[in-house]
Length: 265
Image 1 (cartoon, rainbow, N blue to C red):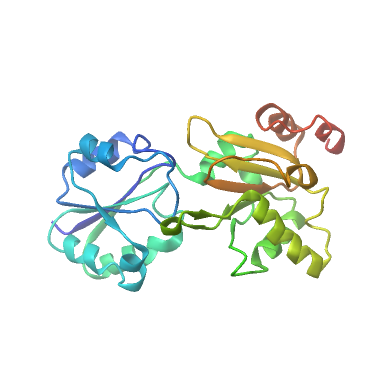
Image 2: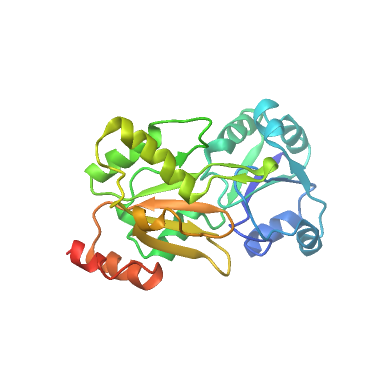
């Protein structure tokens, strides 16, 4: 059967996959997994293979992007094939091209969704889902870009929150930290002088979303610059206009200072 199924793994470990996802794996001939688009800090491959009773083939960025997923497509042209992806399969746009190419080859595609950082951020922070604007990725300093700053500026003009995904290089075990993200944004602020990212800007740092011990900390940037968020993965939220219930949630869930109550109504 010509079929390629994209299955989300969730955010943290081998137990984040849905029961439906596990059942799909058991009936597949080929099972591939990519590990470069997101970091799953507590994922144990040996244990996962025991759970699903399948041998998992790890796929690199080169296989998917430079070789256009040829290995996966070739397998899917003959038998049911699965690609396991951290989070939800298409929150990162990396795999859309692979799905398009599969359909062009007459390979039927399906999606089994998993927990995404997009939904996890809303659940953890208590911020209102409908008040998030465009999401952006902040890159490592060696590839500087003004786009994150511009997106945050645009969102704030509309009163919207910005979720900033922080760059990572999984094979090198490198993860952009929240403090480094501040430095990148502040560098652009020095050039733009729009007072979008200042020492008194409110920010929410998130570490290890999806784990048993996630960390959220909301405060002014001046108080977060040296805050220790612990191990990755990391995300950053730059709020827009906050509703009073969102302020209450940040105080309760993200250890925000009570001073926040005086800033918003």
